[in-house]
Image (cartoon, rainbow over all chains, first blue to last red):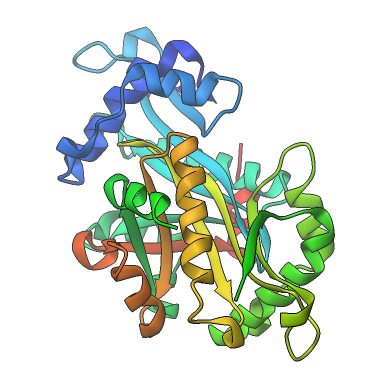
Length: 171
Length: 171
C-alpha cells in the first residue's frame, strides 16, 4: 500500500484525534463515555503543561479514506512513575482506522513508541487492554508483552468525580 | 494521635524509599524494587517531575520503634483519558502497620483527592492486587469501582528485553 508517515501531533490535528478517539471508543463499545472536547484536547496537549503526547499516522491525499481523511491512526501516551523501577511510558490509546490495517502502520507506531521509551530512559511501556479484545492482546503478546493482571493479580480501580469531591471535603 | 500531611521534599526521599520497600514486601514482590532514594530525588524534584508525593509525619514523641517520624506516603501523577480528560493516578498509598487505624491513610487519600480537584481532574485511578482484601475494603468503602471486573480491563507491559527488541526494529 500506500506510504504513510508518522509524526508528532500538532494543534491542527485535534479534530482528527478526537474523531479517532471516538472511533476507538465505538469499537470498545463505550462511545457514550467520550465527553472530551477539541478545546480540552488542545489545552491539555498543547498548553503550558501538556498532559499527554501524541503521534499520528498520515497518508497522502491520493490515498485518503472513503470520507476524505488523511490522518488514519494515532497513539496517545504520557510518562508515569513506578516507585520500584522509575520512569515508564504509558500508552493510553492506540488506533488505526479499519481500512488502513494490515499495512504495518500499527507495528511502526509501536516501534516508534518503544524507541521513545528507551531513549527517555523508561524501564517499560505499560497499557491496558479489555480482556475480550483478543486480536489486540495477541498483537501485543506476539511482540513480547506480559499480562500483569493475569500474572500478578493487578486490578484497575477508579473513584469518580462525585466520590472524589466527597473525599476531599471530609477531613 | 496528631499527624501532618505535607508535600514531600528532596530530603524525604530516604524515608520514602524505606516505605516503598516496606510496601513491596507486603505486596510479596521486594525483589522487583530496583531504584533507590537517588533516582527518587532526581525524578521527583528536577525541572520536570515525574511524580508528586505526600508524606505523613508524627511528632518525635510518637516516633516508631526504629525512630522514624515519617510514617506514611502517597505517590501519584497525572494521566490522561481520551474519553474524560485529566486524571490522577495514585501509584502508591502506604501507612506503616503500627500507625494504622488512626485516619492517616484516609487523610493521605483525601489530600490526593483535593489536589486532583484543584487540577480539574475528573477521576482518581489506582490498581490493587486481587488478594489484598484490607486495601480493597478500604477503597470500596470510599466509592471505588473495580474496572477490571466491571469492564474487563487488564494491565499489560513491555519490559526489559521485550522493550529493547521492539525498539531495535524502529525505523
